[in-house]
Amino acid sequence: MSADPAFRADVLAGLGRRPRAIPARWFYDRQGSELFEAITGLPEYYPTRTETAILHAAGTAVAAAVGPARAVVEFGSGSSTKTPILLGAVAPSAYVPIDISGDFLRSSSAALAAAHPELSVLPVEADFTHAVTLPAEVTPLGKLGFFPGSTIGNLRPSEAVDLLRSMRDTLGQGAFLLIGMDRIKDTGRLVSAYDDAAGVTAAFNLNLLARINRELAGTLPLDAFRHRALWNEAEARIEMHLETTRDIAFQVEGQPFAMHAGETIHTENSHKYGDRDARLLLAAGDWTPVAAWTDPDDLFAVYLAQAQPAPLAP
Image 1: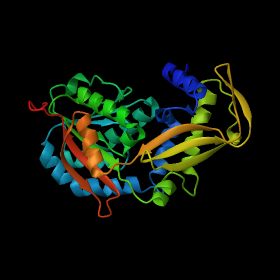
Image 2: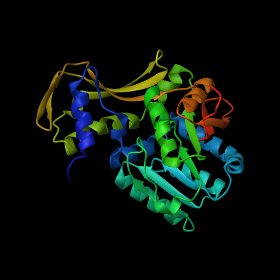
Image 3: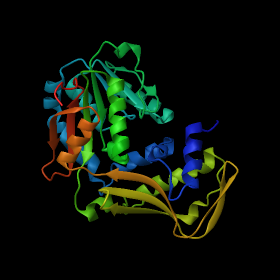
Image 4: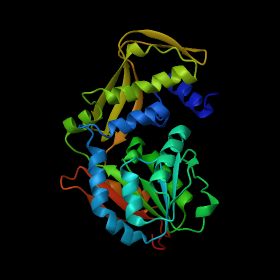
């Protein structure tokens, strides 16, 4: 199978720049998607269980706000825990998961369709960072976008605004968006959530290199890299890096590269947002916040926003 040309372009450009960086969206081949599902169940990884509890508590209020019979459009393949909570609460007419990882999209969609035989499940394999054409079956329906997991935090703020605007273009005027955002909190708790004792997050990070070797004829020595997670106070984000433990030379698609011991490839950001920051981010992306829910410890928040007409006043 030929490699995704966008994957090839991002990897070659990212390894050639200084500092080196590869976009986090390329984590999610089938193995990466399965590893991330495993991460969500780790004791250190509070976001999934906290957001799940919020969704359970807020389901009735979300349903009342958005109304019945909408098409739920999930940006991502859908988790086995959070997606059914929302579907059970809002009684949608259709469910449309959008994901770039086709294998994982098809398997997760099939599992969800089997669990909800009354529901029309219409998976779309696409890069949702750009506007996506939805199936014709959902064109006449109102839309409820779903973007859980604080995935918005993986993007720089300017990129996050672009994504929110693309989501608005995908969903259309009058649509709602239910989105999770992680809060700023104690540094130790943040770092441990991205550097678990069992090493699952490390395996998730290192799988990116294995994917490069497999799909792009790479020769990266996996044993020469280690996973690092750190808190960047100035940017209010957790950063994940792959750090070399020795001097190495390798090839990708026949192009030579060399790295010194201690150099890193920056693979992920996870920005954290206070309430005011989150509302400003949504507004900058042309979404009007209409409701928000959080947990008792204010670790995580879920926002409901709507694509409303722009006000006439400045």
